[in-house]
Image 1 (cartoon, rainbow, N blue to C red):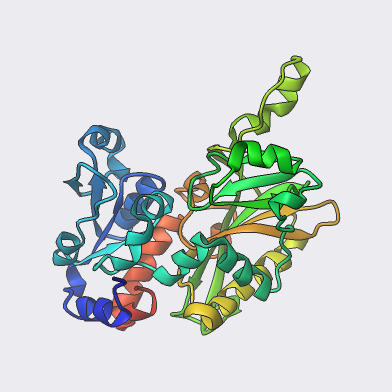
Image 2 (cartoon, rainbow, N blue to C red):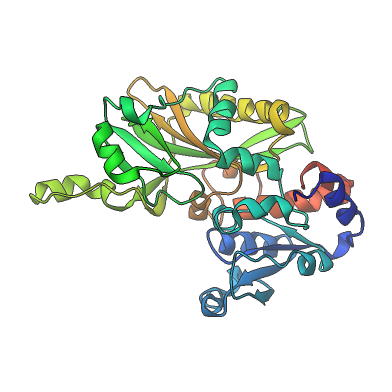
Length: 349
């Protein structure tokens, strides 16, 4: 059964605001989240398997203050976290591990957990994007594939299992009976802008009742598709794979920033209308074509791994903050500000 916003607010009302902690699964963006919380003076909890604990202990400034060891990361000890005044930070691994159980976790979570359900459901996700006035690639009926298309699995899988197909026969050979989405393959530069929406202040780029911030932009290295030209030059055949291996920093030409900021604003205001908002971090996955037009093919309604490239701040946060500001630190800063202002219910559900 889904936990209600009222229940979460009741839990929050019992929290000791001077002893707040930040918790997340030790995966995805955890090093950055723990590091940013440490910079803001907030204690942290890492949900971790015994095997992975040593990885985080190897990075002392990105290591949580305490571990909760679990046998299976799909089982979040919500009651134990709530007893410790913890705010759970969702990231891609947490979304993937918990699946449909995410909405039933009785622990305060940064952001609006409804937005994570809209992210996961591709029909809802494209409704969100199109109602925000953002161009999207065509979604193709599998039996009407007449051009190169990318077939995508549902959920936060980091590109794992995606495949390019060009015919209905090729689709049915590999994906018959699976829960997938077929999108036309767009040609252009992949640009993934990272945003943070704060409903706590109207200074800056106005959006909804607050402001939207651009914290960074990345592009992603996806398995063998990014080395395709080398493989082809070597005379080898291969099946393109889109599993994300890593990320690199991207700085867009400055004339494109207005488009980027307007997309972020429109996503925020449409989220307010559709399901009650998207406070905190989110990311648009876009392709920029030769005419400098943006097409968004996905949205992530939480922190993304591309933000790991700037733990000491990005070329964009450098113009907004006097100190180095990562997304992890920005999350911790927002929690502190909300607690001080008595507005935690605005950013947590």
